[in-house]
Image 1 (cartoon, rainbow, N blue to C red):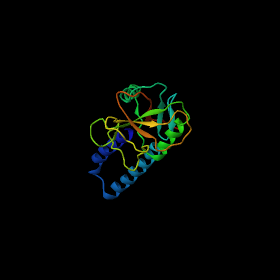
Image 2 (tube, rainbow, N blue to C red; image 1 turned 180 degrees about the vertical axis):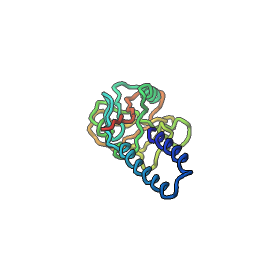
Image 3 (spheres, rainbow, N blue to C red; image 1 turned 90 degrees about the horizontal axis):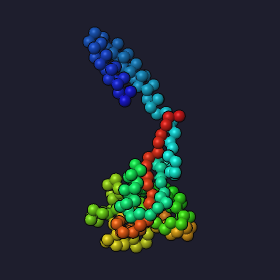
Image 4 (cartoon, rainbow, N blue to C red; image 1 turned 180 degrees about the horizontal axis):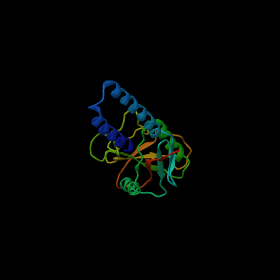
Length: 191
């Protein structure tokens, strides 16, 4: 925002002065403007420290909350949103691996994730309305399996220690209760 104000002020002053300047002076002024932009942009791209609030786990530019309680998928999402988060959206195989590794030794069987088909279409969508990428699906064998199961959990298996990358399972949204994973962005500070 500061850069925008500086640039707007500079353009206003330049317009007032240009009428009396020759081409050489205008060219010099453009060079000065370019140097100023380089200096300002160096401040805009300075290194950042990213972190998460207490009780959240960081991976990349996201923070994750792994619930200690069980709720239906819909109530899990509501609880995440009450905290200012949403159910996790899995954007890569690496993120799927992180979540699987983080949960594999827990005594929890399932974690709700932000994938659903509640709109009655044949297309699965993430909670941000992004359609499920066919190249980034981690369904268990023979899943999704039921027409009346329109929400998704990561099936971990209560601490059995198995690293199953393909662990998604469709469940009922309003009946089955599971733990859940919320996601939000990290907080960044210049260093």
